[in-house]
Image (tube, rainbow over all chains, first blue to last red; front, side, top):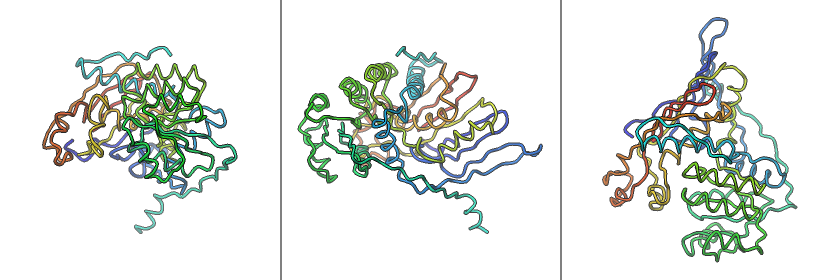
Length: 111
Length: 278
């Protein structure tokens, strides 16, 4: 693309908004300290959320560790397919809508 | 003064120590010994309760070379396919990492689950929703663990996004804008598996778009998507002079996926998701 970033991630709510500084690929952590835009005693203000550094193992190590623990302990998958099916449905829907050139209904197959 | 500001923006938190029972080892196989498999094997090597016992790849000899490069010995690799490896009951496999290209995600996952093997499946889940549903049916029938490889879920800052939403600090969520992208980031590190339709199926949309989607959808509790208006384009991938191709101008003819996608998604609960990825 011919731009540096398509923009920060913003989550808007009725009481506050969250700005998450952009990064080219969200495969790790956030791109910078986040900001919550909200009112405090009637005053519009912003709260900076500091970057957390827990000096722990790499994210990949944590990913593999959490998977192994689920296998050994019989606990649910750390990133379950019951959630990611909705992620996949959006990707699939975008592809289908792009092909037909109009809005499409997203249909999740029966499991 | 600048140092004080930096200190306020950096919060140090001690991570809890995890105790692992190394006496109970899991026997692991790796399906697909390409780029991302390096990260899997690096992590497995650091786990005290893992024994890497097998690996396979579609390209003959690639699995053996992979384990040799990574200094892991005693691994069986003489398999022509993932089926042969999973059929080898002498391995007593507990789990596999599936690190194949996108169009080879569903079938190996289904086969492994049907064999009673836990699966760590790299993202994106699959290429189509129909494939994803078939994998989930196999998961349900097997009772085994299927986890999709979204490592940002384990990052404390990413987890903070969900904590902020869950706290009610933002109130009722009604609109999200997300995405990301690389100015010139079409991945061709080891050939064309990311850019050909027969291997990748989807381009930036799935390869990195899935991460943006997971970050925000996880934060708001993964509501069901209802409708979408989507767009995809390939202006850069189809350009033989694309700077990332170097001398491989022929890649432009092979490019069969997207290098940009955008969408407007309606989610359950009246939430709008405005998405773009490159």
